[in-house]
Length: 224
Length: 301
Image (tube, chains in turn orange, purple):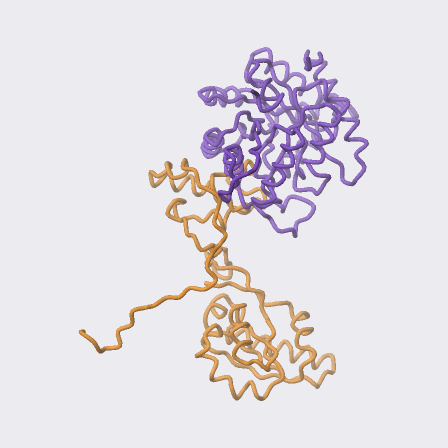
């Protein structure tokens, strides 16, 4: 899933400063799960902003809050038509995709990002998220024992570890596992070390920016 | 015909000595030129480092041009950290056109360990892919499959880490570098000669020359710092203790003593094909080390 972090309150304050009435808009999918911008975070941010403004004696700003099921999907944004008419800007707690779909849907409305979209990852323990996929468009996990060197190796290299690997950790951070040590060990366990001995040519960085999928949807008619 | 003077030396069977020069932080090359003059006739080739430890400096290629201008034999250290495949190929063409015939192919340290931590890491290729790219260019093509109007040629080297604490994946990488056409290897710093012996038992099956990396340490503190912060450096505790045993102010002397001992032993026991001395900012002491190790005579001619 997509993982993000909410921007610092000060930065959010600067972004919304020019607008009197702001809709704080959460997203019910990834941002809810990673705790950056679901219904709960919308409500907490709303309170925090209200407190901050009342402390500074600012009475010009007011807020609406709402959370849609998915900001990245046009069909879930129709419910916002009336709400958007009432405000001067939308502060989106959706990921970068959500912000852009909102901006495309509501052409006259300033849409501001309330989170920093960070990566696609998984949670190993509550509240701790690790990056797992870089969406490189050319998945090679079959060759690397299900461990991604592009995402998990600091250099994203394909032909084995660099010399900076020490105690199984990365030269960048002593707490980060060396992806190539993990890959070696798991390939060994699977009896597939030959995969590491192969040469892998330079990556193809030309990846699709649009995917057209013609799903075969059976609407109940036809032969069935 | 040999691709470079250094390649001739590689094939001559003599005990090889290389060293390296770190270019300056800034545009004043006076000190670097001084070091080139000091070293050019005492070693078989001089590496010029490529933003070592990801610290921005005068470029390796520029340093190699200076080595060449002053009559030395340069080894162009090329990392894939800062240039994509277009820039790498362009720099190789420039190097070849100016008579630089040796390239050390490295992936390079992470951006995160250097002094521009927010820079974009490139790593379009890795070291193995860089070696292969050079072989493709030698065949008269660029990496996009287009013809080159003149194919460059290089004597190519790479690095290897015999002292790695988990050697098996490092050996797989070494094999791939050999297959990709590496002709010589300069190892990461070696202190434990058993470790070098073991590696040589493995690597002697390949037709490549191994130069043992000798890092000259100046104090126990520097050794500890390098252990903690410099990728690929593992200084054993016994060496740190030996450095710590030096009288105050005599740390560097002790470090030189250790380096001399290593070089002498490697040469006398014929443990590998040569040494690569890394004085890390103290290039001026390299001639003394060579002298003390019995390698002081001029290597040219």
